[in-house]
Length: 281
Image 1 (cartoon, rainbow, N blue to C red):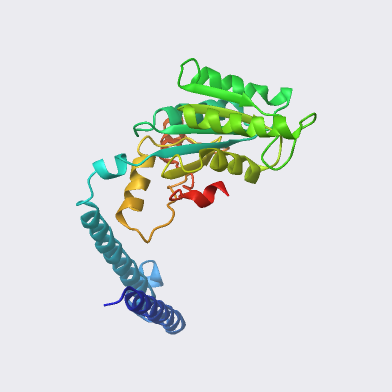
Image 2: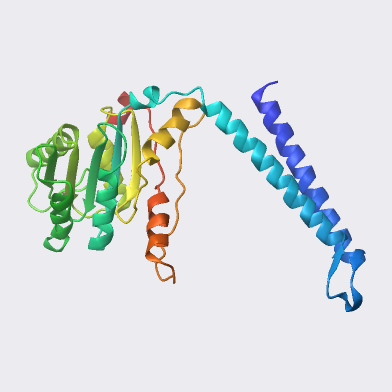
């Protein structure tokens, strides 16, 4: 059966089921029919509760069947195939809290994916932004694999004192640092998050197969890259994958281990591209 027809039938069936459940709940609420009840109705069970219970049971059944289908579909896929792909993690940073930034970079360092390239682009090159570069050196620096560049401009706006020649030299320098370093940090003229991501994408070009993105206050699970890449490699119709993003517990009365567990499961939205020459245009 064609995929489009199967999808249409599922949509129609789901819609009809939802309407049937809604109609049943309304009818049960209006009639107020009860199967059993105790004196003074301290405990009762009626048609309304039966429909809600049946609805929950059916939802659980279909969730179980879908989960089993996905697990079976994923079994033939071997890790060797996704691991042959190259991936770059791009981190967008802007006046980030130092503790959050450290946690983000440390989690990126722990990601279980071979030869993962990490690119942090800082939206701002002023003196008050320099602490983010210092944290980059603290966590990811200190090795030949790390590189950085403080750029007076960005790809769409020249900085003060830039000439056409120096602007082109800066662009080339950004590309060189990003492509030759396992861990790289680019500080550039303020331009907003779109400009930050543009710099990362432009500098990487066709040097990697996929790009994963996150903000600088995100703590990533070590398995996030391989798990999302598994989905992308399994289904050619999937163009992008998002992770299970959960709050870190700011302002909530929870235990430290609960906060760490929530942070550990967070994975930012994953921007995917099969690199080609159009990226360089």
